[in-house]
Image 1: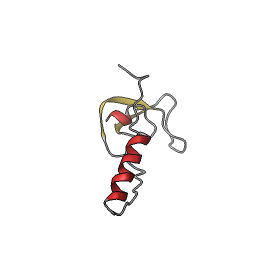
Image 2: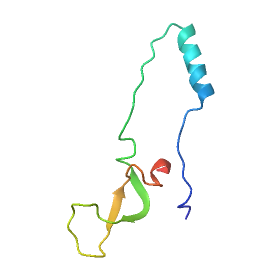
Image 3: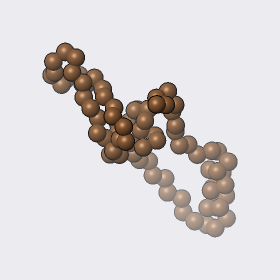
Image 4: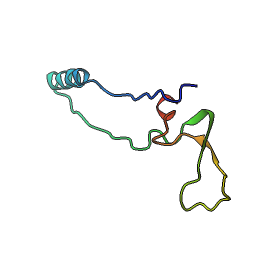
Length: 79
């Protein structure tokens, strides 16, 4: 329905600065955690099809139906 709409969660710089000020005033430790597979295991609420990736042998015209979200998929950020 809204295939062209993309959504991405980002932190605003003012929020990051505010967190750094709170951490510094309370003498707390700050630890960073990067999560690379955030989009990988969420179930899709709609039917999404894709062309099979290279290396998968299939007949011409076959497609794959996704059951889980993939990184880079436009619907992934909203799932």
